Length: 343
Image (cartoon, rainbow, N blue to C red; front, side, top):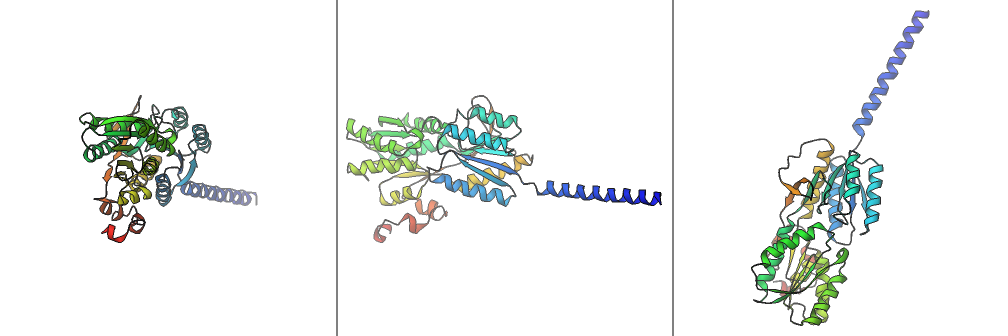
């Protein structure tokens, strides 16, 4: 009797152990990759699109995404990243408020074994596992080429770049200067818009016009800045008479292009960028080789760099690139333009 009882006990314990192992295996199989996505802000129209495509792609790949928005506040972004570290994210993807000031908190994330991806903006000296963006020097070159082509020889231009805390601004300016070295254009006023605030462009145009009313072109670091630059030009009865550049192919910028008040925008296929970033995040979290040979110097380290190509968009190719490409809808782009003008 004692032997039967002992045998029954061993079988019962063995059965329990198997069920526990099965449960643990199930839990491991069900554990999803956790990605923290930290945004500077959603002031710029495109960031909402980046968010939606990234989250959708990551979810399709079986990952969960925790989205944080710092609203342009550096301390808030640092605090949010520390929260993501405490939540033991597998990957943190950051659109940095300040390309230099986020370094230490990202090093802390890496020390915790978290993969770090710098999205669209390089973080200086952080040794990110991946930097994915567009060729920002080419963005600057495209803007400069438009100004050189469409303004008269020896013309006067204004430059309104984004904030120097955004490393992309440095790259855009380098590309711009590469083209401007061989041009006859005169930069009569230049400013770096704090936190990408659009009103900075409005004030810059008015300040420049007060110095010299003869303005031929305005470089705007993005379409949001261009919106207020055009507003200032309009109030001075110069809208449509001055070459204006932008970046991001925002809907209102596309509308201004077909209306004739903005000359060009730089289209960056953000859907492609966000989708690729999500795919790389999942691959890195799984320990898979992403096989990136191109690198960029972040100031201290060579960081793997995925570089996408931007496209200059004007009235001549907006239908082909923006509308036929599905980035904006035709009825939206031509909302304020009469049919006779469209044709």
